[in-house]
Image (tube, rainbow, N blue to C red; front, side, top):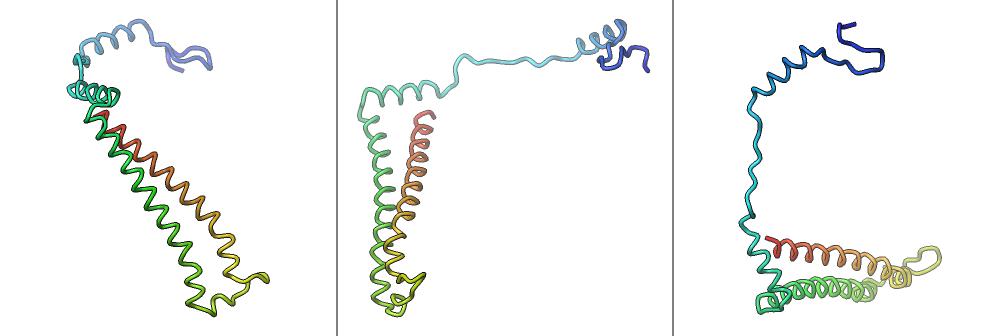
Length: 146
């Protein structure tokens, strides 16, 4: 046991002389100083952009229009891809007749794909659209806050 250890389970307590020596050493060290500026530089521009959005000025309208255009472009791209995939299935079965004769559990493959494929496909496309729309909105918010 050391000379300043207390009862078992209790943290060691330094002796007063040791504590004073430690305090004098730490008092001699240069302490960090925190410098706080009055306002960040870009804050005025952020407020101006937010005011333009709220008052629906021409700049605010352009920002909103760009967001809507991006959302529309994403929706049309995903919707067009989905429509193209679903419209190509009957053409594939028409072009490759032996594929149309394949049976799975007593049901022909075209009936299975055309009856079951659209549901998970539409769910997946909807999920992807929601994620992309949220990302576009986050980009919009971050561009306004800059």
